[in-house]
Amino acid sequence: MEDAESLGWDLKKYIDLKQLTVLDVTPYFTNLRTGKEKAIDARIVAADLGKQVHRIKASRLVIDPIAPLIFGQGPPPQLHHGLGVV
Image 1 (cartoon, rainbow, N blue to C red):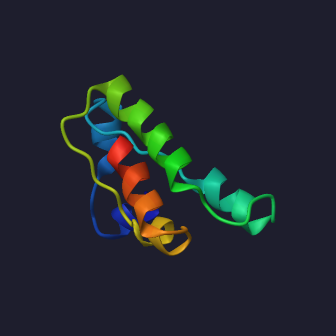
Image 2: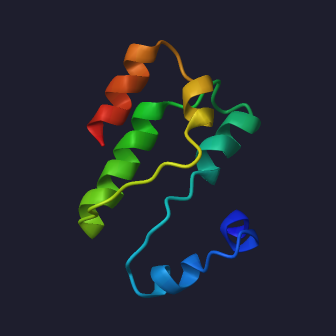
């Protein structure tokens, strides 16, 4: 959110209007940093994201940035399957 604001994007307005939602991925990275997990499981993130997409009946999905999920993940087929769930 801070990055968007620094670019002059007022996303809060759209969140307040329920036209935009943001999945906070901080907990996934916290578990990685604290050593509770050795990698981020893209399947779990994708499942949580999928729930949020269905809950709000989203017509568009933006994943930004996706690089941490790709580079912290095992074999590409696992990643593709996990994101395909969304």
